Structures are given as C-alpha cells and as structure tokens.
Image (cartoon, rainbow, N blue to C red):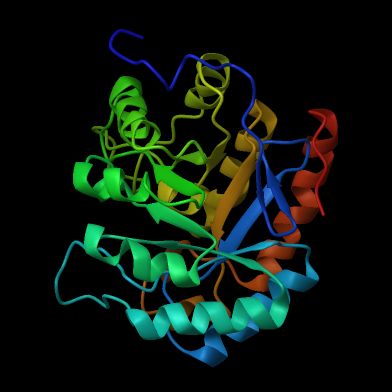
Length: 271
C-alpha cells in the first residue's frame, strides 16, 4: 500500500510468544477477563475460572478511557498491581491498556502485552513510546479507521523499533446503531494476506451485546483469526464497566465448547 515501508514488506508470519501463549501460530489464542479491574476478589475469581478453561492471557483494564468522565475510570496503578499479583498466582500473562506516553514504562513493569485502545490508535506520541520497549503491543483498530490508517499506526511502532505487534479488530462505527459497532470480519484475511501481523477479534466491544459474542466468535474463528479477546465477569449485572457485553465464566465455557469444532475445521487447536 502506498507510503507503507515496513508494515507490508515482510509476509512471513510474525509469531509472538508470551509466557505459555503463542500468538500467530496454530493455536487459537484466548485473551479473556473483565473490562475493568474492580477488586482483587473479582479479578481472582475470574482468573481462576479462566485458567481452568485453558485461557493463557488475562485481560483487564487498570486505566479506562470512557466516553463520560463520570463513568468508572479504573483503579490506575492499584489495578496494575492486582493484575500482576493475580497473574503471578495463576501463571497467566497480562494484557492491559496504556493511555499516556508518560505511563508506558509504568504499565510495562506489570503487563506482558501493552494494549493501545481504539481511541488512541492515532495517538502518535504513544505509538512511538511503545515502539521503544521490548514488549508485544496489541493495537486495536480505531473507531472509524480505514485499513491504511490502521497499518500506518502500526508503522509508527515498527519505525520506532518494535515489531512485536498484534492487531485487534473490534468493530468500526457505521450508520448502524443497533450494535455498539459493526464487525468487519473481512479485515482478518486482508491483514493476513498483506502483512505479517497476527490478528485477533474482540467480539465483546464489536457488538456490545452479550448474545452476539458467541456467533461473532464463531465467525471470527471460521474466517481464520489468530485469537479472540472476550470480556468475562463473575457477575456482569454488577460490573462497573460493560456488563451488558460480558459473559459469565459458565457462558464462556459454553462458547469454548461451541467453537472447538470450528477450530478443528480450520486447522486451529484450542486448549
């Protein structure tokens, strides 16, 4: 694509290893956990249930970019500390969001994968800052980003020296208002044909509706995604963030059961 120098020059698949997880290989990688870290009890209950189901990467937000400043904005460094403590107890890896270039080193002390959220996809100082660390970066697609805009954002990270990039499709804003966003599953094979990046799908943020997480997950696996990022909470009705799109551990277990045959059909394994 015109103007891109690094993001499309190497077509060999970039395999990223984080603790026991291998992203971009033959295994469907699962990143699951609550939208926001609320307490140690909430996080530990969720992590233990997910660990028993074979999940290797725990997701949870310590810093939360919210549309309203009156919404729960996360526990900050305390949330990071809880993530690290629970991950050490369970042996899981941690993925969490960083929002500020000045907080990159802080988040990197606690997280195994640093997430750039959709609202920050074109926060260029932040992209350059995470490009200077030696940790994988999960780059979510922007709210209305085109393919080239998304890849140019990745190019910022690459140009700064970090090639450990995982892309995440989380839906884009269109004229449709029934769902939270519109899922673009076609982007998965496009990314895989034009770049070396692993690409995962976030059906929770893509739809915003609990009942749609399973069917969209099935579609993502069927089209060849390298992984799924799914919000799981022990009591979604009481969640401080995005409870309406979060699964219970029991619902998540059912999702795994239903996607296993699809994984087998496309040559993917699943824990």
